[in-house]
Length: 269
Image (cartoon, rainbow, N blue to C red; front, side, top):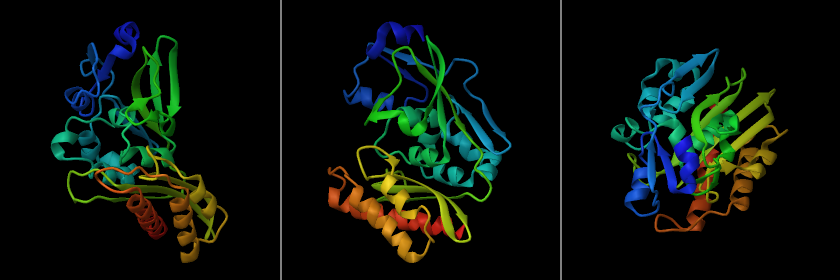
């Protein structure tokens, strides 16, 4: 923390370094100091307690993938982790690092957002918690202050009956980032949606909740027509980027496709 505070924006902290070191090699980051956290004690904790999950900053995606407790408590997270990058990358990459990297196409941030996960941050002023959905301020820029380090992610136990799903679209099956993805959490009673959380990749510069889609689902019987309206609302409110991988119009179309898939999977679960 002292090095981070002293060097401010000229310092960058890393655990696995999968995003940080790529950015350094490409010249996107030019830190004077790279702070390695992998030797710090107490950051490798992984605990499941009554369905809630605690993931220390040193816990790799591979450790989550190999955990039978995670697979049992949060199967949708376990399945999603297995789609990220490649086994080689998952051996080094961490869940906390994925969140603090502020990736524009993270598979994990939207799912953590609908799960209500929080990031624990420690700094000179003490410890605080941030909702995962508020960690990214812009692509590759997080909300941590100079001197602060992310130490863990806490995921509360999903309430009974909460239906969860995640759907993504990639150009390749393996080792590819999603052009669009949707995470949904639904709470139903008598076929009517009493709570809807929707987070999307590809609808804007960062993964984010879709208030338009959530409003279209809230209080509605989840008929095929209601699901189509929610998808249309998500597409209409989207402001997707356009780049060498896909045009904005194509991403907008894909947002509707993956949201319909995720909603269908959630209802079938």
